[in-house]
Image 1 (cartoon, rainbow, N blue to C red):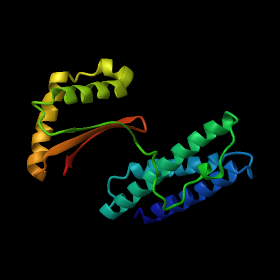
Image 2 (image 1 turned 60 degrees about the horizontal axis):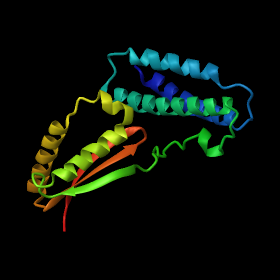
Image 3 (image 1 turned 30 degrees about the vertical axis):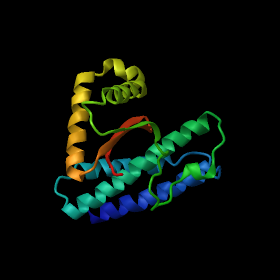
Image 4 (image 1 turned 180 degrees about the vertical axis):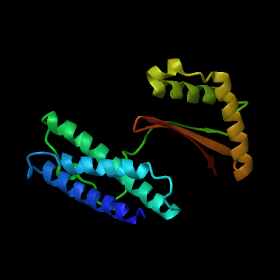
Amino acid sequence: MYDEDLINLEEWLRRLKIEYHIFFNGNRKKPPDDLKIRLERLVKKLSESPDMSASQRFRYNTLITRFYVYRDLWRRTMLIKEMGEELKPAAASIPETAPLTAKPPVTAVRITISNPEAEEQKIRQLYNELLRIKGSEAKESTLSYQQFAKYIVAQTRSIRERHNCPAVAFAIALEEDAIRFTAVAENP
């Protein structure tokens, strides 16, 4: 029932990608707004369809995710173009099967803890680094040092028992405006 709409959605998305590529390379005067509007109407229509089969819903979700990624890329590229900055050719398109590449995370700190009860200064350093990375958001944070220390103690014990390792390495990184906090077993 929805197979034809999904085929159209996929085809229009492919065509819209090509049209934007042509536009951003300077071979077209106006952005392809007409096709984009048609595609958005189809997306809305399909989103309101509760009786899709599981395979149709999966295909729809895959296509809609791709569309949102492209739409965000086109929006950012339009902003750059409107600001008069020079576009790099690769910035205007994403290969159909290429995964999105993120900037590598910038690790702010990596601390290894083996006995959290005896290494309070390391836990305090980790907590202070977290607050530093959070910056202005830190004032709004409800996470106290005591809560954080309890969490570190519990995580250290859990990971050491699970992996039979002498220590746990905690890392805090800022990755695309999001804080990434990881804990991994540290083997000798």
